[in-house]
Image 1 (spheres, rainbow, N blue to C red):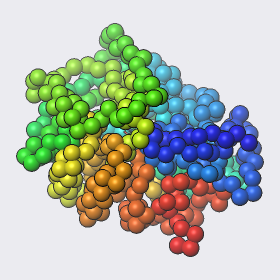
Image 2 (spheres, rainbow, N blue to C red):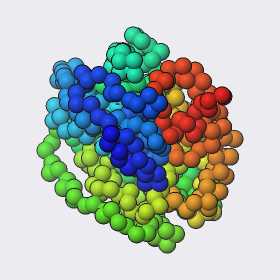
Image 3 (tube, protein in one colour):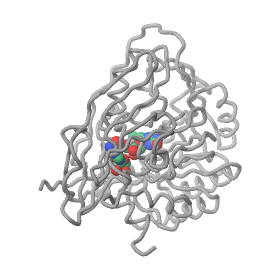
Image 4 (spheres, helix red, strand yellow):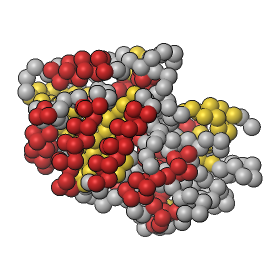
Length: 440
Ligand SMILES: Cc1cc2nc3c(=O)[nH]c(=O)nc-3n(C[C@H](O)[C@H](O)[C@H](O)COP(=O)(O)OP(=O)(O)OC[C@H]3O[C@@H](n4cnc5c(N)ncnc54)[C@H](O)[C@@H]3O)c2cc1C
């Protein structure tokens, strides 16, 4: 038995697991000891404990990294579940195709993208990752292999999309891609002075622009709450050859003794980021790597938060109450002096969610990173939870390592329905914390 200490992206929890892997997608379900539970592990880009199974087994999926089929005419690709989205992009972009949905990092596996039903900057146009999954195979602990599509084994299809790895092992998946002309994007960056301006501009942008996202200064308060830079973009219609940006291979060493993110660096960085753009509007072509994955150029940037790690608080607030609730959230964050330069606002659209536990819904999502400051941070989080719950919002399991059980259940009212699809040999640290308790 191989025991390995495995952590998630936030580096708050690093725990021993029995590490298992499959050599091929045709391998049988791995042999577990009588009482052990299993969880598939993609590339560990989830921030909290949804990709961990403390004291149990993790099935490391990166060994399933083969492409199976790519039809350059229809844009349908099939690959094993451990293939990274970045590896798919390398293959498909030169052929004039793009993934319909990409999250803020390309170092995510196909299985992980399905299990969290990840969303991108274009949710208002195309929905989430699960809306573009044509089929996948699920390997259950009984050894059964079940092919799921929107029309075949439908209930299991919808439970597995956003199903947090609990319904079985996705061994391969087939995805519908979208056509593009080339790797370049037309990007417009606009400075916004407050939340009201963000809401106006976002509403104006959604019809014309496929991708809309805003970085915000989470320390700005009062009339300046919500100030930041909104970016809106489309794939460029020309295929003009431009020099591709050189991405430095910078990395952060393992032993960063303290967090680089503190109240002083945060205030300075946020002010610089806001004023970096001299004009109100800037329009420029950007390579897709630079636009979609700005942080991927710094290997292990998560280590900047030091040995105690960090949390990301990502909530979504539905519908009309969003602006008021977001103002309250930003006021509470600015008042606490905690936060980081990674604070992002995005709108999600009304395209039907595929998963019983999918996070996106019609509304606005705010994501902010916070260095782990123990009880002080948990006090702030409790006050943010109260605002999110009052506005009938919810938190994103992929980013979570601490939400209270009642908040999960209220935010995901279909959680009980979901329970019937959980494979009995599967579990996770997250699920034991927020999901069904033994006698619930
Ligand atoms: C810099 C950064 C930016 C991000 N931006 C976004 C964003 O914009 N939008 C967004 O939605 N998310 C975003 N995320 C979160 C990330 O996309 C998700 O956490 C994603 O699920 C991670 O995938 P992974 O392959 O690393 O899987 P892991 O984190 O290892 O696992 C995630 C879940 O998938 C399950 N799983 C993995 N493989 C399989 C499989 N083969 N079969 C069944 N279940 C499986 C695991 O059990 C676990 O529940 C971001 C993360 C980072 C670090």
